[in-house]
Length: 506
Image (tube, rainbow, N blue to C red; front, side, top):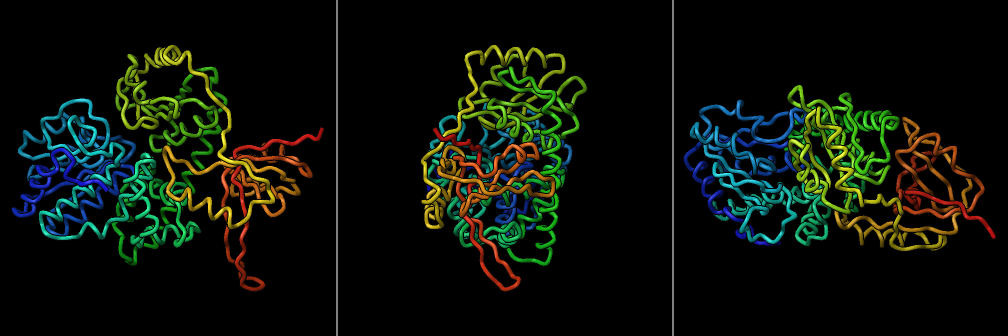
């Protein structure tokens, strides 16, 4: 871990918070709408409530967008201190409005700093002259660092009670997992989990609390929590994360999150399928306009399209103005899509992270943007090669090997992805179409099961039976308890496949 005192302005920011506590000033925290944003808010709120009850949380729903400009009309005149977390580094005009009303402004953020903002005290490792080494910190981690300094000033240790939340914020916001500080906090989250609400959510999604991995979070708990924000129910996400101790309402929150997540999966699948017919696959960046998807799911649909066609994707709907479109982009690891969009003349704005964020464009300039991106990426060739780390014979795959691999890749994520393996000598004996929407295929290969997710009946029909194949994917243990006719723990070795190919004998 790095010292929080390496963060530029952190003493000034904390001194202002301490002053507000000592003078019983009214404090307003503005919550951004993703997992990182609401976890940042919960961490700061819970710490401040140890010292004062004059604290409020304000937010707008995801469909309205991001940034302090959307909330200033909700900030009452009797507010003394406004704190924006996980956003607002570049919000000069909105913070100027608040400052002119006599409200001091603090910003704790990790997004790019594009302009000088004289109307706030800013803690952000991206700003010039900041000596904090971890430039891949999330909002939740930076808020936690601020809370550590508040503890120092107040001679307390309250931040330790919330030490498991920053790691989840880092993983959810897809921050670099080669960064050792990030890996440390991911470990604290997964192996030192204290949050009772998260425990119940993991259990409800059939995760083993004693053996949690980043994958359990990224493909289970995280999308369930953000399903609430995508459904314009940020309050549910905040209320759930407030439940670090067991309360009667927690099970109800978990049930509602899972319900919303199942609905999100269905809508996302239908939207992605519907868009296939309108795509121009020859473009370097696939751009789709579909106002029926909604801002909450634009990014997820763009991610599905990008993965399927091995190129960046932009999914747009109607913007705030009648002459604009706005939506989300998803990029590739080859280059920063965010920086590319910022260089485009036909983009109104681009914000977020290198590979994921929001974008706005004038309706009349949409075709010009498509041509501009094709020109800027004229030398870019989409790569549909499937890469893998190691290869094994199916006979050598067993529980011990999978457990060893799982431990090595336990804290995976951006820049440190779970291992992908080529498994040879597989013989398909049977297959089955599964899931409520028939979008999962299980392929039996003796002691190893191949699982293909987010697919369809056409894929199922194409899988050959009584055929030798080799497949690429990630290894996993499926462990469940059978209660009838007698209780029995069943363990199955699985390969979550990306693709397979038939082996023809010479």
